[in-house]
Image 1: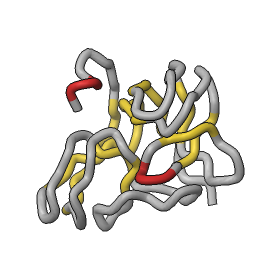
Image 2 (image 1 turned 90 degrees about the horizontal axis):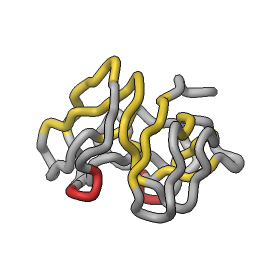
Image 3 (image 1 turned 90 degrees about the vertical axis):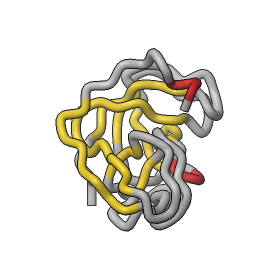
Image 4 (image 1 turned 180 degrees about the vertical axis):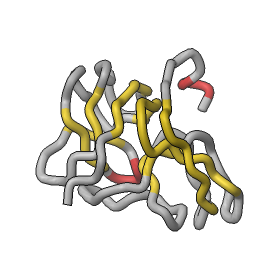
Length: 118
C-alpha cells in the first residue's frame, strides 16, 4: 500500500466485511471478502490490506483509490480484471469511471464508484 500514499479519495459510504482470504488494498472485493471475478460486479474496493478473518473496510460509494491491471485513460469506464485489479471496460460490468489516468499494471489511480449494472 506504500505506493498509494498521497493519493486522495472521498468515499461516501464505507462498509465492513470479513476477509475470506488474504487481500490487498485498493482492489475489487465481494461481500464475502474475496476478490471479485473478472468482468463481474463487486461489492466495493478494499481500503487496506487484510489477512483471512480480519475485518476489512470496503469503500462502496464515492471516490476511492484503485489498483490498475493495465494502462487506463482518464474518464475511461472500468471493469474488474484479474485478482481484483481494475481495467478499461471491455465486455464486463461497469463498476466505475477513472478520474485520472493509470500508467500501467500496479499503478494507483482515483476512481468514481458506480452502482452495479445488472
